[in-house]
Length: 456
Image (cartoon, rainbow, N blue to C red; front, side, top):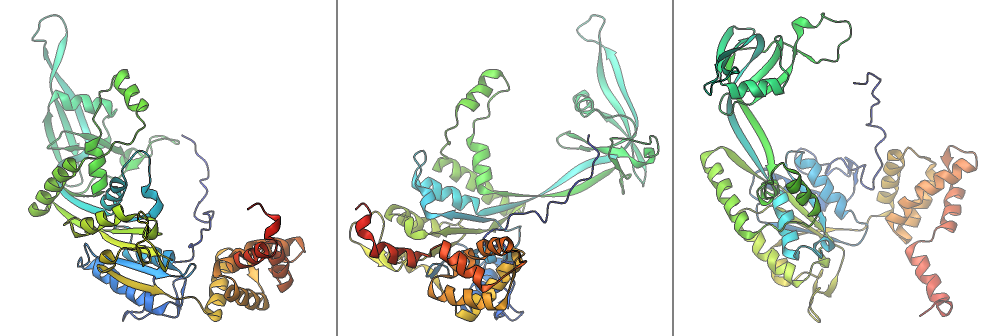
């Protein structure tokens, strides 16, 4: 065990595109603040997303779907991420891209179903009877071996457990003694034994022995409170996909052949519909008994126009099943052909019958003032100092080209400013990096002008 200074890793995280988004930024009454939680503008869309969050929390949204529609760079993915931040870490959030469904190993519908199941959580509450305490004695009782011979076998184990409230002596099965030996338990250790399964877990050394040595690689724990024999409620969060995978893999033995077999089989096992139905039965039984509760999460499908007609018809059915999450689609297409058909055109590349089932939230392009605020937020997130004149210049550029291009120029400009011996970005650094890196529209114009030099 190495004893050294452990560095905190919180600051050195990579700054991603949406690192600055911390939530939807709504007031108590559900109206949107103009600038809050890293979000700027898009008040209507954010208020609509706030209502979706309330629906999800009150569990009235299962099997519904939302579509975020808007031009590129208007904050659709940011909106979905803000939604997941608002819901908290206990609600499953499963993001995927439309083109992920095209795999050579697994059917398209299987990929969709897998992600559907990933987005549904199950909270299982279990009450376990446990014996917990510090070991005061540990004496194995031996008897003559019934098979004859000189060897002796262990008939039972006497173990004394002590807590703050009292002590108790237990007579244990020899099988439990084997697991006690595996855990390398000695007198003075704090352990707990599950009554129904007989599993033994060593928690640590009792802290009454803490002054025994000057240097010790042991973890010291306080003496357990309460009685030795107590009931503990254990809450476990799993997704339906976890249950599918756990039951789909054939449990091989521990011998070399089966271990090699599992290593040689990198292919994805396709989970059958029959298995899923069986798991659904068990899950429903648990829910009826009150042992488990269903937590419908969020499945976010970006670039939904990349799905084809088969996936859309499958989605129609999947959305209506009793176990289905809240689905959020995002697309930046207008009228276009549905993939997998030759001439069927539809809004956003989504069939009309599926569009009927969606609540559509529209995101609008940002104004110049909003782009300036976003650029300031991004500069602060990336630890870049920028002059006010440069921000206005970039915001103006963002309106003419795109918000993404304006944000992308921030880092190169800061490097150019450093080369020029300054700590902050000036307008001339912006102009220099704009000359080095083209935006999409300028590049297209350039191509148009010089197309005869390119290979057609």
